[in-house]
Length: 368
Picture 1 (cartoon, one colour):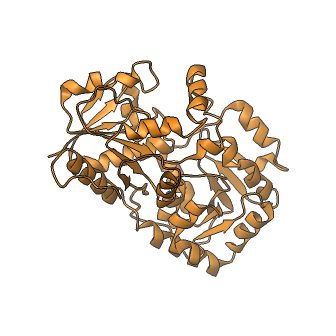
Picture 2 (tube, helix red, strand yellow):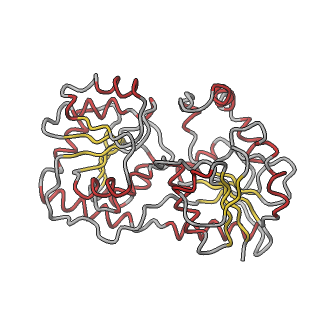
């Protein structure tokens, strides 16, 4: 069986973000198909990870990262997979798979505020041109990405000579999706960060045209950023900031809400979208190519409505269309049908198959 080391050092300790959820879900599915060891850098990360063998190594943001292979080589992994593209590879004696989720930060270079100042400076320098990413990706044996949209951008910008494998995001299993015929509450759900390109401002501008609706903002947020967003609301009582939400409460919210909403100006995938669709919850989204891709048949059947990112009126109109019971029932059923086309098991199968090829357990890897 393939001895797969899975880099879980980007897992959060309390509430998942996108990379963290991708990591925890994929490593659990991969463990059904390979001998998996999770790589962590702090024990608290195990709070959000499955019960699997693990190895504690240095932080991915430490000065030791370029030479992290020194810590892994003695354990003789068949292959190492990282859900990010920044894992060090100097001196490694194993195949390495790196992941590119998106190219957002070339157009929106502001780094996350929670990173140390030195890392933020390096972040900006890294995204100044495509050259650093080319150098990093070409040191790997293969590259994974989560969508055809991002795979197309990788090819367009010639980011790597390595094979590029599609290892998609997927929703968690939802055994009992909502009843499409049951009237939804007048609640909207936003799950995601509050960085500028996420364009939460336009969602709130649309909410200002929807009296009687409540917008649940589920992710952790800094106090100053929350104050900025509250100031945009005509009626601040329509905004509910959760500062992180439990899986149980999030599922309950998706089961009753009218829609999951985002007017982001850039995305590599949009995991909250398929999570909502798995519950049978319609989505109102910006008209990005990636949302067309993952919405698929749900877009045609209105399970996912696409509107211009900077058009609050169109956003409000899309939400109001779901007030029609027949429209909502159709959209809910379409969203659920589309969601079952994604699975973590299928993504794990792609990862393990790629790992076996690279490790010599199967045919040699070929460019896609």
